[in-house]
Image (tube, rainbow, N blue to C red; front, side, top):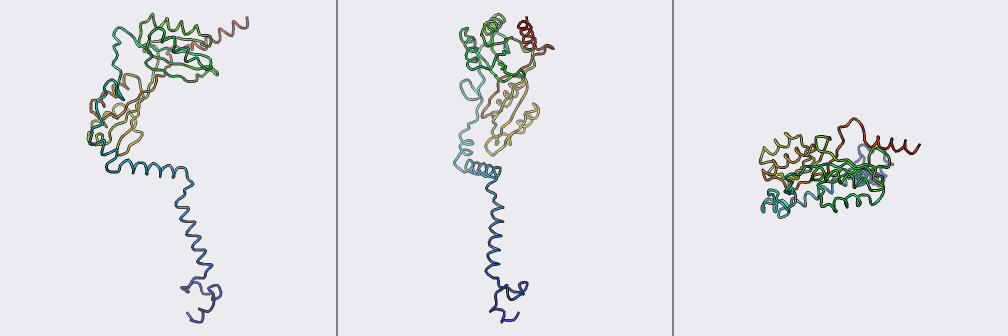
Length: 274
C-alpha cells in the first residue's frame, strides 16, 4: 500500500480491506460491539441466571475447607433418631387405642380452628396430625385431624365439634374406611449415600424421588400411606444416613359412594325451602 495514504483518513483512503490502520470511528464501533457482546454474555437482568449464580456462590461457600462439609464428616452429625431430637418419631404408648381420622367441614371464618382444637384440649386428647385446606364446595374448609383414642371418645369429639355454630359436619373414620396419603422429606448424607449402595436401593424400592443433590446432603421425597412412609424412614435411619425427617399432615377421602357433605347441604336447602 502506498505510504502517501497515511496522510488520509481511513474513510478517505478507500482501501479498508487491506489497510492495517483503523480510523477513530471504526475503533469506537468495535469497542461498542465488544461491550454489547460482553453485556449480552453476562445477562445480569435474567432472574434465572442471577438465582443460579447465588446458588453456586452459596454452594461454594458451604464446601470450603473448614465449613459445613468438614464439620459434618468429622463430628458425625448423622445419628439414629431418638425421642426429643430432630427427626425423631414420638414413641408414645398407644396400647388399646385406635388411630381415628376426623374429617370436619366448616364455613370459612376466622377462629374456627381454635374452637375445634379446644374440644381436644378439654378432653386431654392429643392431636397427631392436622391438615386444613379449602374443599371443593365454595366457602367451605376441610379439616383432617388424626388422634389416638377409643371409639366412644372419637364419636364424642365429633358430636361436640358439630355443636359449633360454624361447623357443618364432623365424622370419624378408621384407616380401612378412607383413602389416605402423606408426604415426607428426608435429608440424607450425600457421602454416605455414595458410599453405601443399599441406601439408593431402598430409595428406589419405595418409589421415592430425589429432589436435590449437593456434596453435603441429598433430599428425598416419599409420598404414600402412613405405613410406607414410616417404614421407608426406619430402614434409612437404621443405616445412619438421615440428617432430617419431616412428614406432612394426612389428607384423606372417604370410600363411600355418597358425599356426606353434599347430602347434608342438600337436606339443609330442602328444609329452608319448606
